[in-house]
Amino acid sequence: MSMRDDKDLSLAVEALLADPAYARNPLRQALDELYTEFRNVLHQIDRVTRISDRYQSVTRERTQSLTERYQKQLRQLEKMARISDRYQSMMRDLNEALKEAATRDALTGIGNRRMLMDRLKAETARAQRMGRPLALALLDVDRFKTVNDAWGHEIGDRALVEIARAVSDAVRDYDICGRWGGEEFMIIMPEIGAREAVPVVERVREAVAALKVATPGEPLSLSASFGVTEWRPEENISDTICRADAAMFAAKHAGRNRLEVAA
Image 1 (tube, rainbow, N blue to C red):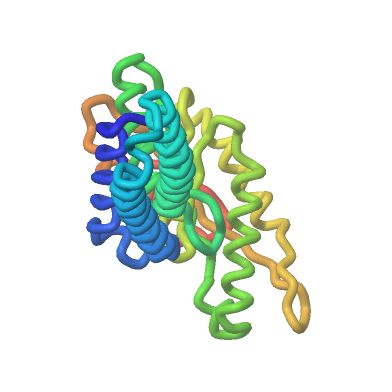
Image 2 (image 1 turned 30 degrees about the horizontal axis):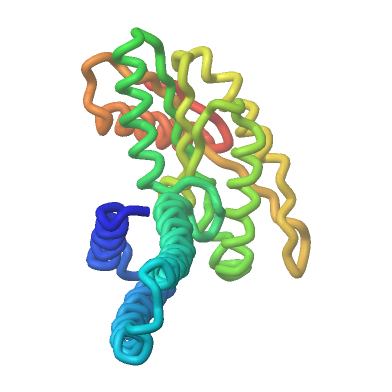
C-alpha cells in the first residue's frame, strides 16, 4: 500500500473516531486502541531503523558492500510493509464492523431506523427513475406496554426479537424490513403498489399472530396492527411515512390485529 493510501486510511479512521455519531458504539474503543497501537508500532519501527542504520554505517560501512546494504534495507522495508498491511487490514475490518453496527438494531439484529431511511431514500429514487411502484408498511405491536408491565422488559425484549424474526421470514426476499423504534417495525416493498402489498403484509400479520413467546407462565400470544401505503411520485418521504402511520392507527382503532390501506 502506498504512503498516500496509508494517509487516506489514517484520515478515514481519525474521522470515524472524531465522529460523535460513533461515540457510544461498542467497537469505537477497540478501533481507537488498535489505531494507537498501530501508530506506536510504526514509530518504534522508524526509530529502530534509524538507530540500526546509524550503527551499521559506523561499524560496517568499510566492509559492507553496496549490494548488501541495499538488500538489508529492502528486507526492512518489506517487513515494515507487511506489518503496515496487517494493521491496515485489521482497521478496515473494524471500519466495516462499525458501519454494520451503525445500521443494525442492537436488540433484534435487523436494520435500524438509520438503515431504513437510507434504503427508503434509495428505493424512492429508483422508483422515481424507473417509473416503478413502491409500497411501505408500518406495524406496531398491540398492547405492548402491558407485556412489559406484566412480564418485565426481559420478556418484552424476547418478544421483540421473535417478532423481528417472524417479520423477516414472512416478507419477500427482496423486501427490506427493520425496527423503526420501540415496538414499531417498517417494511419497504419495491416493485408493488399498496394493494399488491396487502397479501405480503397479511402474511406478516399472521406470522406475528402465530407467535408463542415463552414466559415463566403461559406462552405469550401477540398481535400487531399494520398501516400500508404507496409512495407517490415527487412526494416527500416523510409524507409517505405519515400516511402509513395514520393507516396503522386506524387499524388499531378498528380493533387491532389487522391492516388498513391508506387512501
